[in-house]
Image 1: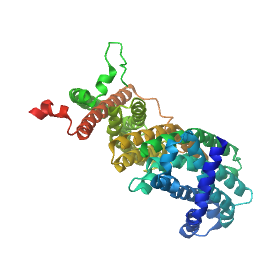
Image 2 (image 1 turned 90 degrees about the horizontal axis):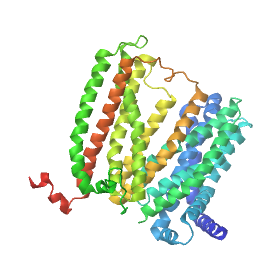
Image 3 (image 1 turned 135 degrees about the vertical axis):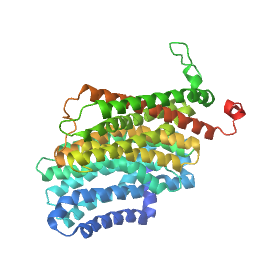
Image 4 (image 1 turned 90 degrees about the vertical axis):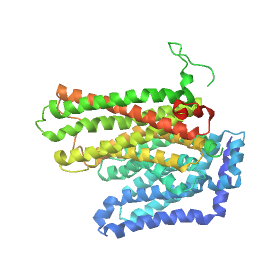
Length: 222
Length: 254
């Protein structure tokens, strides 16, 4: 089983490496969306400091969603997905490995970039790690929930917009808890409760989402 | 799916899982539900507008409760019913269950919208604002998004079988998420602004008010069942077009 997981992750990372521009697009989108907000709401540092976690989180949400369309589409087109469905190994494990690889490509860069963006918004040095930690816990949930949407909308016309419609309402708890962690820390309440709830949701989605994604993939690939 | 599950009276439940046996049954039941809904609605509105006393705090404006609360109840309940039928459809592979899910969704979305709309109309005179980011309002809005997502997914898939099953998975994922969404919105709200508006500490209700509201809630139930049956009949006709049994229907031979 370990060998299978490693092989799937290695394959996806290799594919991503061969198409580096796709990864760069997501990261650039994230940076540009975050940079738009100060231009929209004005440059007052106090205001920006207050809305920074929300903005960075919303941008991360959108960037994650944007990258989801690539998750199964090319495998569906070239038949690799059918091979995965036929494989003797449990589909849930393959899906979990793929979701992890996808997170490494599309989620982790956002987590790594967030401290730099936090500096842009003059977020205090105590709060910046909380933001990074909340993103570290939250972005895998986004990938896992998004994978369900990506599997359901596989190969549909207008799949991108439809995917957004399906997935964004389900992202709301992650957004609330993630951005709320930073707000709570800045209010002196401590971010523990929010981060623990995020971790709980990560465990919950990590357990059930691969299962739902497998079922959705079987339906879509029929 | 083939081994019969017998109810206490010896009725095979799965007999009515076939569209061709359910279609005439639904046709027979539908008018009963419609008329019951109409009668209950008339009785509920009469009590609500003429019998129930004026609220000493909110004046006449509170009377929107007779539409608002039943709509809000129904909006949440229908989603759960949809998820139930989606689960049944996935487990037993019954087409009719999936059709029922599709038939319920527009009614659920309609009630959600009505709940939000009447809530805004109620909020203006009592709270002084059309909308507050209160936990209940926000989660009701998200519920509306979930309904829209479900309907958009089904509309986006041409193959009926795939649309059914994809929608069923989405409904089940949604119903698992509803408590998570509700509680996260609740915590978010208490952290941000505190409970500026509390709906829970409503004054104890006069018996006539309560009975009017319950009558309206029952009317909403009957109406939902009637419209769902009506819509499921249309879906059956659409899906089964060309089937032999359709030609032998009384309305076809007339």
